[in-house]
Length: 237
Image 1 (cartoon, helix red, strand yellow):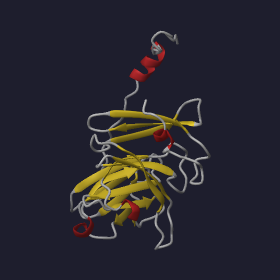
Image 2 (image 1 turned 90 degrees about the vertical axis):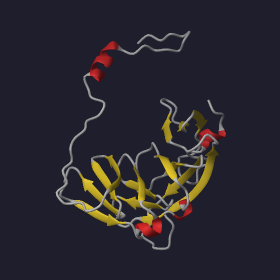
Image 3 (image 1 turned 90 degrees about the horizontal axis):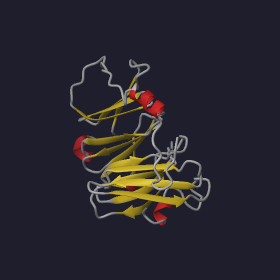
Image 4 (image 1 turned 180 degrees about the vertical axis):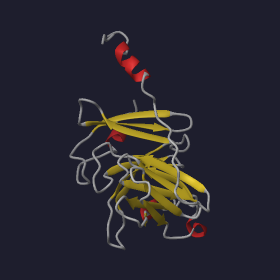
């Protein structure tokens, strides 16, 4: 592939383009439920061949599409009249971690090995519009993730499941950025290829795209000098 030093543009390979054109961007397949639903669907998410459906009653159905007859039937701990109707579902790529947000800004966390959604007390009152999962390999915890809110705030949060009833699921929560351009409608982060010490973050609002890049120090644990908030300490590119 030739690289034009004057423009910084690398033309795409013709052979690669032909291969990509032969593959669909995504496939749509019909899912037939083996049971009746008496209430309305209000949200859905799918990842790693796991389908999550939310109903207006606060009921959540977790379906392994490899074994569609095996369904986890889950309820929020409180009725919609108390916490609001489920508004959005955010499922990580491994389908291990699910964050549920309601119309009254009550937020819950559900691990794949649990059937009990746990309230995220530190995120209570935050209207979540987007979530960026950690690009590292999934673990028992979410590790550091970014949460975009309707008021323009971006938070970094670390969620670690706990079997202790009174222990908070969030190990910590901190604000890392704020914009006045409206809600955070999209978030993306990755590791810059060839530079494992660099992270970049892209933020989308209804009117702008922001790109940040910064050096990551430490091993990505909570005790490191920084984690996903490092790009925000650098300038916006």
